[in-house]
Image (cartoon, rainbow, N blue to C red):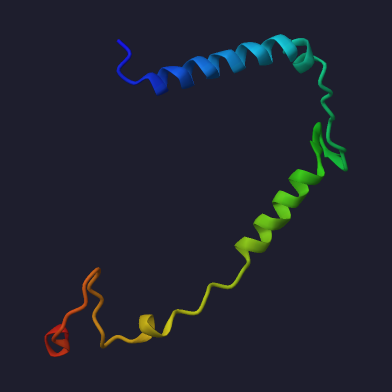
Length: 97
């Protein structure tokens, strides 16, 4: 049964540490229930919908990303002569054309 005694010693030590921690640092669910939930600040309301700084930031970033200019294509993407063959390159460039 004890094929690897070091493994059993480690398992028993971890269980003992868990029991000691539970005895000296008891955890109750009241600590979770006692946490305070802070509501976000409402900047203004549209109808009955509150607009918070998070929503306002999300909309501004969305507008900035949507209106951003597309990137310029790389030099290799502008060259029509070179054929794209992923993941290997042809050794004979004359055959690639």
